[in-house]
Image (cartoon, rainbow, N blue to C red; front, side, top):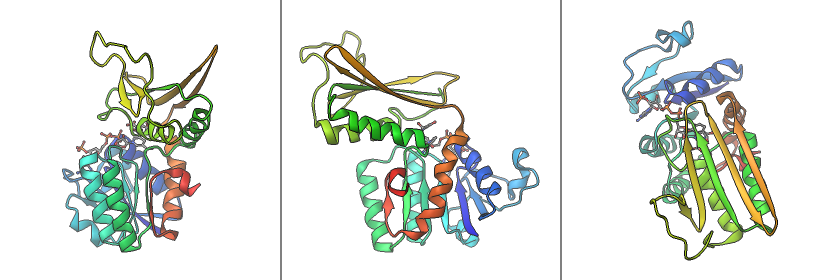
Length: 262
Ligand SMILES: NC(=O)C1=CN([C@@H]2O[C@H](COP(=O)(O)OP(=O)(O)OC[C@H]3O[C@@H](n4cnc5c(N)ncnc54)[C@H](OP(=O)(O)O)[C@@H]3O)[C@@H](O)[C@H]2O)C=CC1
Ligand SMILES: O=C(O)C1=N[C@H](C(=O)O)C[C@H](O)C1
């Protein structure tokens, strides 16, 4: 059985991941972590009644549970330090928290290599999102004029989403740095044209009722192509999280995208 610890277990994603670990017979939930948790046992929380696992509120204390995998759905500021902590202690990180900078990832990859520990940082664990990004990259070869519209629930802290940033990076690898729109355009209200990543505009919508959705919209002469992905339930991320938990121990590097493990 693979011994797993979940950081951020009270959050929307952390709680879903905790249920996923409990449901899989080849996984053992050895602990959960939240620095402000006051409970001692997971079962004290109503939605986990009857499910026992130690609750940790100190990073160092988690080592007593001897986790092999560290699942992280927390906040960017914490997740970078958590991932570093996991790697330093030979625990494989499976990180879904978004907001890592390119430098954060580079430094953590160097640490993973030095420690010979495998892991994954993925801005999106859903298969449809991975395909949406790959199809978009393919389309950008023929349609370099493109904008991204990402739409999320209104409790999301970061904008643009990690998925939108990764999509923009993948588009830039194909289309280069090319400004989108009229070179003489002026914003009469600042922000009207969205964020700018290598010339690709990213528009972030935040509304109640949404979970996670993204539209990559290409324009050509007299034609258009829209590649859209919709997340209707956070369960959809769990196939990818479980797959990563099963595969990362067999590698000795820190990957930055679920596609590397599929
Ligand atoms: N990769 C993917 O497929 C997906 C990634 N995400 C990303 O996952 C992250 C979490 O999203 P979501 O679950 O919606 O957010 P939530 O706000 O629901 O959950 C975040 C949790 O992290 C806890 N937390 C805060 N600080 C720390 C810390 N230092 N150590 C451990 N836990 C901490 C919070 O606890 P408290 O409230 O007590 O402060 C909270 O329970 C976001 O970055 C989001 O973008 C989301 C969906 C899919
Ligand atoms: O916060 C979310 O909900 C999500 N965050 C990730 C992101 O920032 O891309 C993944 C997904 O979009 C849901």
